[in-house]
Length: 251
Image (tube, rainbow, N blue to C red; front, side):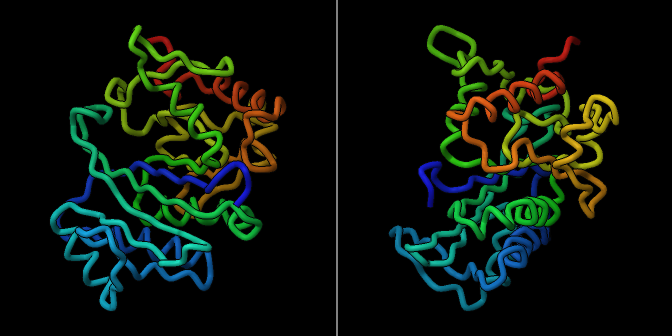
């Protein structure tokens, strides 16, 4: 890993229902994007790792209860994990519960090269509205754009804009925040007005269409490092371009 820490992926999708196969699809997508990866271990109630010889059946059974428990590769030298969290109607936009899928991977050359494929595969498996992948080192500052302070509204560092709480956004298709790599479904792209051939000419040089019809949009050529003024400026420009993100657009 680099000093930026692991790569953190979060995608936001409709809540799990019934015999939902999206947990399996997200896990399989992550494994396909990183050939040789197998996520066949779980954490027990005693916080120990246990093998999952029937992992797919176990995940499918857990999904019927609305659960997406963590699975990992049991490699302390190269830890990879993925899990999901059900977000209630009270903490989701538009009063519609969501599934948040979270993954963590080492930020090495192989993961950097495959990061766009990893994000797209996980988002496609979850049938996500939107998602992002960002080094952990930058994720903390980005999280402060949303977190309220004791004095009131968020007070983001580095001149980043304050964003609304998730539940205050009008629609689940609107991304809450930006990251290094951004997945926007077709609905999310439409909600924020992307792409505009003129205003998005630079972003389009680092963007590609996803198989789902959405987009993968990369803000910087290398993993986002907010100590780098060029990277910080790229993030700020993207927020200026898309005021809908984080609920900042005028009503």
